[in-house]
Length: 600
Image (cartoon, rainbow, N blue to C red; front, side, top):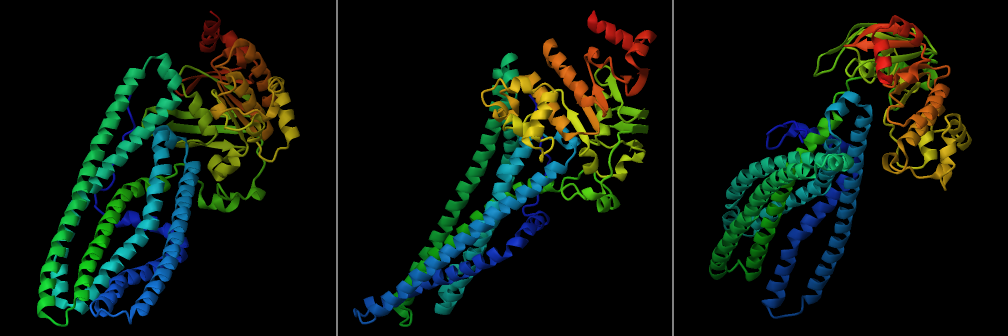
């Protein structure tokens, strides 16, 4: 089993271009960030002040052995506790608000893009790959841009505040303490590069594993019928072992990094005790309380340093997520409307339906060429005229171009040459939304959404009443089997319609197409997966749905298209024969051979 290979992203340790794009999502949340930042400033000031409050107690109460100033100390401490409680609440509330809103915005934009992307994107991108971006990658970004940024602000303010106070109290001892900083910076840069590389590899492998999970679950029946359990297990075991190796490597670097920082902090503490002790002995102005402040500040100073290191490491992890999410959000849409078309017809999400003309159903291919991005030419100088209300059957071996033709009619793909006209107007002179609103597409393997039968039929037209849904079901003879269920139209269909047979799902999809009242109908091998008895019911449903509509039928069972107005026999993207069933049978050509071979 082969898995989708993730594209390679930048190896830059910190890519400002990517983060600039991500920070755009912070603009609507600047109010929450500002309030959170103010709270963090207050917290940093109070954290710097805490050792000074204790110094007051040491030098004025403990050292003097007098409790005269004890009420003052208690009052100072009480004010400290009240203020810090208010500020911590403000900080947590606003950081949480940023996290939730940010995740919502990123996922909304990513999902919006997924709705706009054409078939070609889904042809080349596995579902598991997309799911990894929509879930874990989005979550990583919202976490780091909410808690991470505010924690980063607190850490920087703490380091600056502590450094200033230490320099004011004792310049020489402060310089001795801060002399450790260059070593800290070097260690951070060294480990940061390796942690980033390791986490990039983890993210790439995670996407493959997510894709493998998706294939394993959706293809469970195929796996069991082909007895592929052992082979799939070996493949998945290989993926997870690779993931484990990358994770261990990342954990080793992270595990070495933090003890290294602690070791450096311990050296700084030892310096403070040694030189600070000498100051207490030789300098009358340097009190025990001041030494306590310095010792406390050393501990406090390296806490934000470690926090900054953690946040930088998380930013490095999140950069991999940012690169992937932005690659989805900025994915180029292959099929787009021109600016003047959007001005008249509206966009995909904001349509100007008042400007939408009715669609009669005339379709014309005029010297159309088509080639997939990776593959040989499918259509070349292809011409076809279909009048409104006509039914056209497409017949031919696999790869003849049948699906390509209907996908071009639906504008799921764009021609690479020539043009397609709808009602005499070039297709791209009207919007994609206008066309899709007037299309009906019944797939060979119909997909039902989780929910009830009633809801699934109503997806064809969301404002349809219950009575209209039931009437559509009756017209395609779906009502008969629906009434056999205990809950009738309220019956849950299960994920993908798993609780219904293929024939039942197909009839529901016909009812869904009928209630939408499309002017152009596509039937993609709609009877190829059902038994003969069900085929008769579906054939009647097809005749009902086709009435008065321009219909393109892809059929392998040629007995289902004998009444089509026009049958096209395709081979390598070219029309080899064209005519009604009777005419083509009389010719005794390719169609005759295909038709008679099925019965033999």
